[in-house]
Length: 610
Ligand code: AGP
Image 1 (cartoon, rainbow, N blue to C red):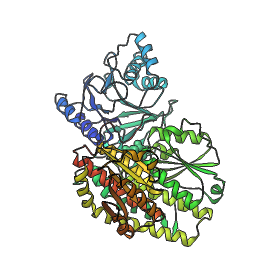
Image 2: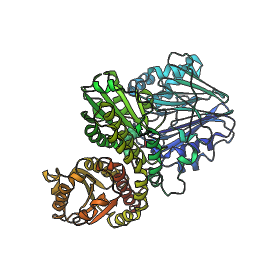
Image 3: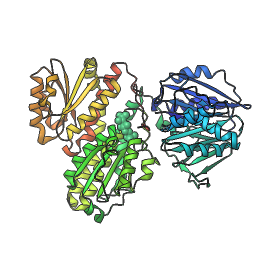
């Protein structure tokens, strides 16, 4: 989604803003712009399209500016064009604003400001903020106070960077329900919507809390709460380095991130295995708590939701607690039967997905205990949960989630085993056997990744497919959903996931000569059933690519056109390994089609609006 960078210091600001915005390109955008302060003026340059277009235009900007704000916009209110791009200037040009989020009451505010003579130029909700800050600034002559008064009137979500042509040495930032950090440097300070934007300058940051407002000068940062009292902030030190957020020789971030899967799985699993037992940092659920849980809800969006569907099978099988999985955008509005007798597991890579965060708050409001599986350290979901397990996947830049999904699965299996053991559903020897299997996963994935050329070859023959079906049973159905989503989002090929047994209740009508059907087949006890389903689609002309363990490959080869072999792995944890061939398949299909793999059309990495 939209990206924000801001700078105040001693260096020329424009290159810092442009480089910072480049690091946020992965979030998805359709226009970009900067506003810089120069001798009592604010200069704004913005345009539709890629950052390269903006780079051409900023060449004429003053080089001696030392303060400015930049933005990449993902259109919500108003089409992507030059006028709707950020930054937005206030009526007199005194105030410039960049904004992430959505202002829900902007029409009401717009009418009010128009009645006071403010003239609007764009169709955006953001422009009201610029005018509103000017409205208050005109009577108070104090930028901090003007921003505080303005945000007090805003309904919805915002991360803001605000500069004023009267204020040479100050800029103001604020947030509510949309992430914003302050980067702390030596004689320079920054704001950004995401860490990679400023990582080459500093690793020390403040994470702004909801409704906090920050005042940045080149040599100081002060943060205030919504009542105007100075907030005491802890400095958060970012441990990962710039290289983790760069391509490292790969053509795409997505490939780099898939290649990292064995490593990040080790990072996620191994530190939690302690002397044959599971030790989950930041999860404080006791045996007593577990006994009182009547039902678990798992709530997430997109790929994280698909990880939740796998977890339902695993938790029910191991811990024998009923589990319901919900899409966050539905959960929050369906008056769910959630109470203190429920554990709600929230899954999110970014930790900032708005629907997921809202679902968390709704569940908490109803008294449920919240356990979150999150990748981004210090994110809103991480901070608002009762229990927390980080997936140590490192920065995931490609819009299509890959390594984060594998680590979400690993974390969820750890939680399932922990619940099962504490509840007495499995004994120590079963726990130890499961731990041994989890330990072996990274090495098995190494082998899957070293065989990727076979998938590439298959994709090179089928990338012109118009529609592809993914079918599976049990955990393989959950996997099919993820395989199908991955393919759709980066290759734009229509695709659907079906439970193997459900196909003949309608969808099989769409299978014709040459239709490609992908079949994960990792569930030993369902293998024969899937073989029958394959025969059904083959009889109607389908071409079948199956994914199965070595031990079953010979049998599957009798019916499928192409078999991707994965190392022998227990059926229950097989999704962690079997998803990777499907990620690779989506990747190679998209590359063959010439798609922008890391930045697919219309998509954003972190969905911070409804
Ligand atoms: C994944 O490939 C998608 N781009 C998307 O579905 C994503 O998983 C979803 O938006 C949830 O994001 P989160 O994990 O950051 O909450």
